[in-house]
Amino acid sequence: MDRIDRKILAELHGDGRLSLTELADRVGLSLSPCHRRVRALEESGVILGYRALLAPKELGLGFSAIVFVTLREVTRQAVADFEAALPQIPQIIEAQRLFGDPDYLLQVIAKDLQAFQQLYDERLTSLPNVQRLVSTLVMKSVIHDRVLPLS
Image (cartoon, rainbow, N blue to C red):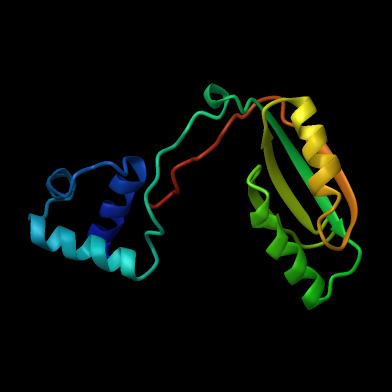
C-alpha cells in the first residue's frame, strides 16, 4: 500500500459517497487507475464496505448502555457458542472480546430504559454460558464513528 492508496482510503473514509471521478480528482489520478486501486483495496479486504451513518436518537433509539459480560467458562466451545448468539440480537451494535475480566464488552442500543430492561431480562441473560452481566448507562457519546488515523 502506497501513499496514493492511503489518500484514497482517507478520502473514502471521510466521505464514502464520493463518485470515482471526484475521488480520482482529489487523489490526482485519472479515472481508470483510481478505479483499479479502489477495486484492489476492496478485494484485499482493506475496504470492508460502504454504509450510511444514521442518527440513532432520530430513529427512536435514544438509550445506550455498555454491558460487561463474564462467562461461566472460557473454553473454545463456550466462547464459540456465546459469540454465535450475539448476531441474533440486533440491539447489540458492537461486541468486543477482552483480555482479563470481564470477558466481553457489548454496546447496546434501545428505545428507552424499559426496552433495555426487557432486552436485558429476556435476551442478554439468556445468552449461552453467561455467569454475570454488569451494565452501565451511557450519559453522552463524545467520540463515535471516528475516522481512522491513516497518516
